[in-house]
Length: 224
View (cartoon, rainbow, N blue to C red):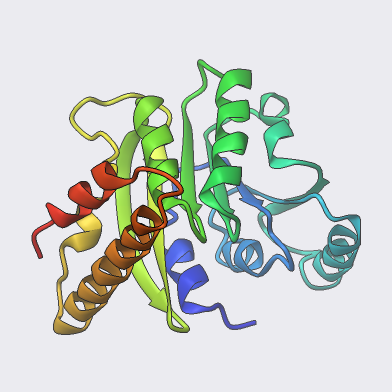
């Protein structure tokens, strides 16, 4: 299965330093399968709360990855209840395809359950990026890398963080590296995304449902 540009970007950001990689909200398991194929870690975990999806995925993994060098595991449970303590080693938790608000719930639960564990998170929310960044910043998470990608006319921020605090690399509320384009094509992507994001928050402000003037000011301060 060919990965979408979004999933391919996430897959390429995974570094070979982990004992366990958790592909959360994995849906049909395309991302985890790609990581399994290239033996990105000794153990690849597939996590989703929908039993039918996990049963189908289990069958496919048994069919195509019986002789895989890396071990694979399926878990039908909430991301908030990952059994990290049962598996020794360095963990990477990938969460994609859900909103930033739900990601916050998951991350808070995991951080509360394992406050002393050094865990890396690779996150790609479909919306509520500002709220997610705000929570990561409040938790003193350390930014490892971040990328802005356009896929099928939608924009995605991929934020790679560690729960281990590092005051030299805090998580920016509006992003930092994602605005630094290395090509004309990417420059157009960043410009379009900034315009679209500002328009989104300006609509909210004009609707008088909530005061987001501080968010608008933060994005307006970005220099491309």
